[in-house]
Amino acid sequence: MAQHDMNIANQGFPAFRSDLNNALSAIQTNHSGTSRPTGAVAGQIWLDTTNATNPTLKFFDGTDDIDFATIDYSANTVNFLDSVVSASNLVDDTTPQLGGQLDVNGFAIGDGTLELLKFSETASAVNELTVTNSATGNAPELSSTGDDTNIDIKITPKGSGNVVLDGLKYPNADGTADQILKTDGSGNITFADASGGGTQWQTVKTSGFTAVAGEGYFCDTSSAAFTATLPATPTLGDEVTFVDYAGTFDTNNLTVGRNSENIQGSAADLTVSIERAGLTLVYSGATQGWLLKDK
Picture 1 (cartoon, rainbow, N blue to C red):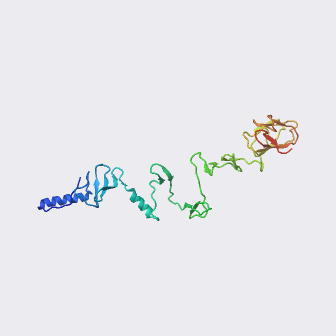
Picture 2 (cartoon, one colour; picture 1 turned 30 degrees about the vertical axis):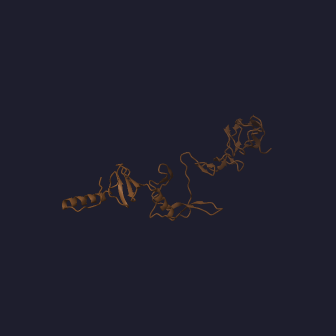
């Protein structure tokens, strides 16, 4: 505690020196104490040390003490208490500017406890994101800008998460060659083999196999009959084509396994026994299942 009434009385030298030193000590410590200094005048600032680790800096207006800020000795921070003053400063300054870069304290912006937006900086960066607002009837824009001429925008989900844009969920990994993007009608987009378009022809098959939508198969039954099983869980429009490679379907039949789906509306496998037959099956849905595209 170091307070003084700031009144130096007429006195002998030793007492005068002691009184003066006490006054200077009070000034150095902002008149710290547990109550307002005796003889305080309007405009005086003093430090209330009632809370020893979080003292309060106060301003005496001649009648009352106004709490100005608390000093947190543990966190080494100053917490301003007069919200009216701080708010008016922000409102009055309609074009606030920083003298340097915004320090987001650990590369994140949030409410003080939870991170809302986090930044990661590349030391050699020359490209960045630019957010542009727009006038009535136009969309705001998020664009890639910088020193390079042609710059992509990259959105990376975490782990097995997906990129979701306007309710559509896109896959988080690439598909295989020649696959296309396909929706299930419920917002989920996946890579799938093309169907209903160009057929992807496979090498000659001489024994049983499971077909893939969008593919065509040359089936050689010259050695023995076998079964070509249709794809599991087909979707509307999936197509599969089978061709009698050696002209032996009449002697060694090709069986088309239905794989739990109907064929021509029937819960039975299809037997192909016509020499040099070629057929394409297209999936129509659960009721009729796989239908002959050409007859």
